[in-house]
Every structure is written in structure tokens, then in C-alpha cells.
Image (cartoon, rainbow, N blue to C red):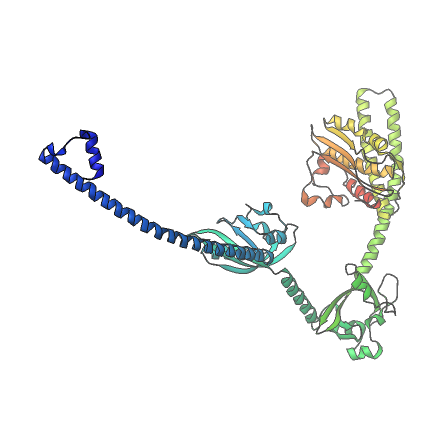
Length: 549
């Protein structure tokens, strides 16, 4: 009998119990149970044997898998290194970005940031049109969007705008990225910087147009020349203007155009042993250069000279354009004479007007000291206020005339900013108080106690700025005048004066214009606030006179 069954029977019936005394059917049942136990043991032994065999196979398989995993890990590591190298190579050579399906930037690489001038934080989450150049035709972007929205790749060249406003050009490939359901989840753009190539192409096109000009009937005198060979080719206007039948006719007497120049101060000179006539033009390309030459009729003509240096097939030559500006020069001289006369007239008139104006002010003061009733005193105050306003306008015009004529000179004296400037500015506290405006004076403690300056003119500039600030600042606002030391070098100290207010402000598109004569930020300013529009003009001119801005 199976040992397990035998032990269970003894536990139930006792150790010495004779099972033969049991009913036959019970004994038959026990036999069947004994057979089942034996079958179970056989299956258990078989299963154990099977498990042992399978375990050995699994161990072998595990070892094989482990070995494969190690090999696969090595391959993955190697591929990761290669992928990282590919990414670094792309980052160094290509401009990469990704956007979501709405066109908002989700990724940019370092090359993108470097080329555009924006930081990664400034780009992420922004529409990709942050770098779109406003001059690019809208149709290009519509075609691009239609293409990539239809799950197709787009390729083209684009002109973009960097953060500093400069232009750059990129050769662009845009790829829609799809999920397993074939839906677009984002877009990837890979670009190469072709700015140098585009600029070079434009330069070549420009040079080509210059060459074409030689064969066109231009209003200007145009010719090509070589330092060693002189004039090589010239257009019709050259011969018509200077009275030559052909280039050969010119070269019978002359080799270089400079031999026609009339020597006079301020105009181009003939070539000397020390300097070729073109040297100064190329040395100072942004300055207007003029030449005096007699035309075919023997009349003295003034020409504006432009030169372009060209290298072609290992040979350098210049393209020269001489524009007749004789009438413009005559008009300029007449305008300068008129301006000088106007300035002199304004100065004389200002002086003439100030004399009776001062008389009016004086007699008004005498009237105040007399016995006046309330209505007469009110009228007298109106007279004095209007006279002082008119006197200020006259003073502004006089200062403007002096500046325009170049007769204004600085009076440099030792100045203590902590006392002299502060005391001069304290007068505005009452004016600001009348409008319930807070007026604050801040002077940097590190500024020297003695500065050499034209104190009167500095105060005049600050007065103009503070008057404007108070005038255009509403009730309960604030005006702050500050002086700050920027740098000290030897016995020179760079100082910043600034006035800050909470007023109505000046539109950006008008901020340059307000420094022009008689110009104000708003055409309604004079009607609403008064003023001539000369204050900032005079202040700006005084700053330039003091080598500042």
C-alpha cells in the first residue's frame, strides 16, 4: 500500500488496526485510492524529471538569451554613440526645428538659435513665423503649408529675419511626421544656411548689372578703368559730356580721367606719386566724393563720383559713375546762403523783440506794486503770463538761431552736482505740486563733487525735459530726475542724466521726429499743451555741442 495512504489510515484507525476487518467495498475503495496515489507518484516523478530536463534547457536558453542581450546591448550602445555623433554633426552643420500641427515650435537645435539670434526659451511655444521675413511673398508660405498639410515633403529657399532685424537665407526641407494611424503629429524642418551663397549671388548679379550699364545709354558718365591701363571702355554720355569722338580720341591726349580734374579744395585731385585719385574714394566709401571738370562747352561742371572695384578673370578694374550734380550744388549753395540769412534774421529779430518784451515785463512788475483792484490784478497777471510765454519762445528762437549759425559756445565752469544742479531743479517741486505730481531728485553718491561743465546749458536741457515731463504727466503721477556715474577714466567722468515720468508717452514712430525743428509728437499738442516744438531740438543740439547725445 502507498506509504502516504497507509500513514493516513493509521492516523484515523490507529497503528494496530487490521484493515482486513473492513467491509469489502471499503477495501475495494481503498485499493482504488491506493492505485490513484501510486499513479499520482508516478506522474509526480515524471513531472519532476520533465522539469529537471526543461530546467536544463531553459538555463541553456537563458544563457543564450543573456549572451544575445549582451551582444544586443553592445550594438545598441554602439548605435547610440553613432546616433549621438550624427546628431552632433547635424547640430554643427544643419539648422533643425520641430513644430506641432498648429505651427508652434516644440524643438530647436543650437544651430537654429545661433543663426536666428533667439534663445531656446524665446523660441519654444512661439509660432514659427517669429523668424519669417516680412518681405517674403505670402504665397510661398501658403504653398508650403498646403504641401505639408497634405503629408508631402516641401523644399525651397527662404529669407528669414533674425532677432536683431538682419536677414539670413536657408535652404529648407520640411517633413510631416506621421503616427501608426497615418495622422500628422508634428513637422520637422531641416535647413542649411545659404546666406553667404545668396549674398554672393546677389553681388554677382549686381556686378553683372554694372557691366551691362556700360552698354546702355545712361544719363550718367560711366566707364571702366584699370590703374595700369587707364580707361578701358566708356559709354556715350562720356564722349558727349567731355567732347571726344571716341576712346581713341580721348587717349590721344589723356590716359586717366583725373587729368581732366580742376584742382580745388574739397574736390578730387589728380593722381600724384603718393596717391592714386581713386584711393580716397575707396578709403571713405560712405562719403560723397565730387570732381570738377570742364564739359565740351568749356563750362565748369560738378560730378558726384561713385566707384566699384571688380575682379574679373584675374584682372582688377573699376567701374566709375560720374553724375552731373551742378544744379544741385548751386541749389545747395543758395540754400545754405538762405539758411544763413534766415538764422541771422531770426537772431536779429529775437534781439529786437526781447527789448520791448523786457519793457513790458518791467512795467507789469511795476503795475503789480501799484494799487490794483482784483480784476485789474487778474488782467495784469494775464499780461505777465502771456509776456513770459512769448519771451520764452523768443529765447528758444534765439538759442536755435545761435546753434544753427554755429555761434553758440560753451562756458565750462566747476560745478557741484549735489548743490548746483539739485538747487536748480528744486524749483520744479512747486510746479509739480500744483498738479499733485511727485517730483524726485536722485544723484549718484559716487559722482565727483566737482565737474567741469557748462552748467547753464546742462540745466537748460534738464529744464526742457522736466517741463515736458510735468506738462504731459497727469495728476497723481511722478517725475524723476536722476544723475548717475557711468565710468571714470583719468580726469574724465562719463555721467548719465535722465528724466523719467509716468506721462502720456511718445509713439515709437514719432520718437525720432520730435528732435526736428518745430515738430511735436502730436499735431494737437500745441493746441492742448502749448509750446513751439523747439525745446527738444535745442536740447539735442546742445548735447551734440557737448559731445553727447
